[in-house]
Length: 182
Image (spheres, rainbow, N blue to C red):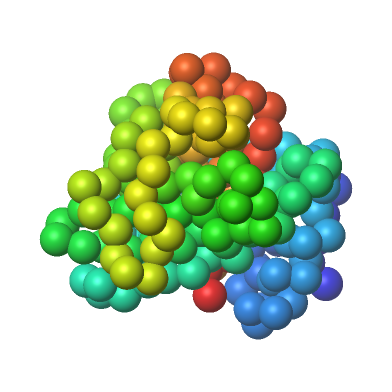
């Protein structure tokens, strides 16, 4: 059994349990965690940085990260990430993409106080692979409400699991998400 973050004093038992389980069990556990548990996990993972290299595969290979956010609706998604020509980019694959857009992002390294890899929605890549939706800016239409002015900061939970927090215009939004690499 994978412990609940809110009942844990440290990340160690959660990490050990995640490592002992397979992908499907990790995803099922993640899907059962609400905002309270994601907040607790974010706090437990403080200081555990994620590198950009951990988010993508070899050049041109699209890596799918199963995702769960803390929003009350439309909380299941995927982040699809690829490295192309030295640029690491991705988008949010989700059921409401037709309405709010794909949320294209660039992956970079953050400075203090967050450090490590992050997803930046401030600009988009010059081009996208054919498997991705067409590029569109994140500051037009309904995309503005969801993705404009946003950076997602990341913390490592285990080799397969990441917890993230969204910031808009440099301020925490109190929205969290988890990713499990497939």
